[in-house]
Image (tube, rainbow, N blue to C red; front, side, top):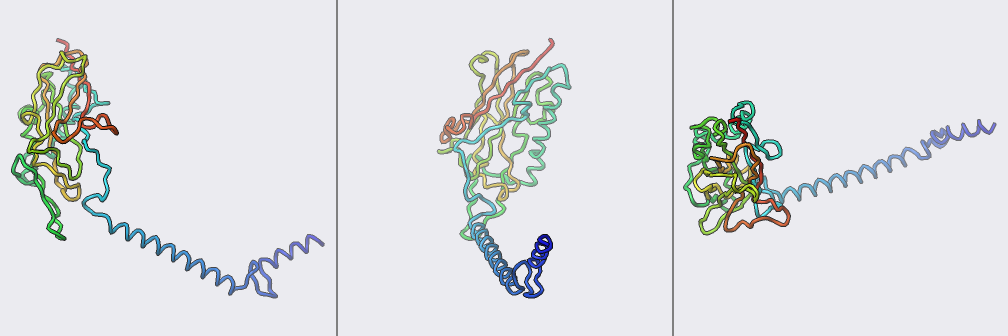
Length: 284
């Protein structure tokens, strides 16, 4: 009998035919609750949409409103090998052909014909400033030509193997892009210098820099961003190792020098410099 009463009580809770209540509430009561929550969630959705709209009004499609910018840009090499270690044997083509292919792939956008077609021939040794005219946005902005032929012996044009077959390899260095940075003052362009670590000083040998003196010409700055300068080509510096000691590890460090770029950084001690290992083996 008690079980029957309990069963009937549950039935009446879900649906009471006398009061016409479902789960203890009438249809009008359920309607008011649903109406309240509908209005509540519509309000929340509207508040979220308004917040997003206001935030998006502060953003620029072509330039970040805020950027965690280091005062010293980072550097990278090509080819970079595994863990910034380039090692091969001169007599064995299979040990260095991947480095040649990596350089070919990297430099293909710098082909002279491609650069002449896409980019502008700028006036060298001065910044290429392209300001907006009030509310009139100057987009897309022009980019200066950087032709691979500038790299001369390391361009892959006169020597398609970049010196790897002769034990005189080329390494290409690029600076990371920093929007709006002017990396020099008083018209003195930044330049790259490379040297051996302390224990390897006598192993490095003579170096050649392309362009001459390893400079990044001022006409490639400032950089306005990927969307603003869709065809931007980063300037490069190539280093050719002429007579590095064979069959030994040589630890090399390259750094960028400029009169307004500090050396090192508390947040990144390797900012503005890069270290890599070079080993050229020969069975001769």
